[in-house]
Length: 163
Image (tube, rainbow, N blue to C red; front, side, top):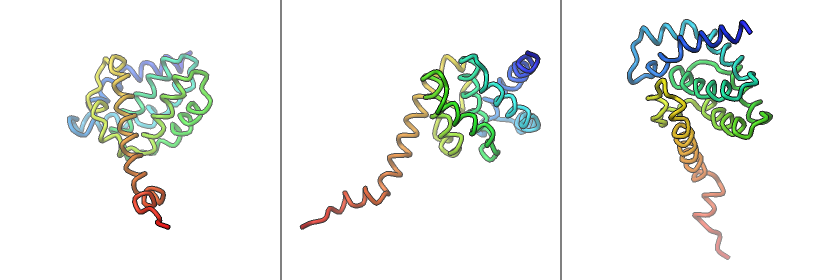
């Protein structure tokens, strides 16, 4: 119980500033402050992903996206493993779906640069949750379709074999 309270306090103090910590509109001092606490924040999010409360898990997934967008160069292997586990085994279809999407972006943080809503998330993050996932899915679709056009199968379609 103490760890959940500590996690909640940590989230309430650090997360409001995380949306400000985006590259386009952050102060270096704020970003450095968050970065100093990064191992603790990552640990807390990892704990939250194991919560039986679906709302805690879903909000942590969104906050992990913000964290990844603010610090794309950091190692999130511990979180990736937990997110992948949620995507495969969570009780709720909703959590599995959201974890699957978040997993892709945590593994491809450069893709988050194209998701504009991540940069403007504020305290009303849940009011924008559907828009966030909609943008993530659209970005993922566009990236995957670009990759498909360079596959061998796509190249064969564009140059059909004549008999």
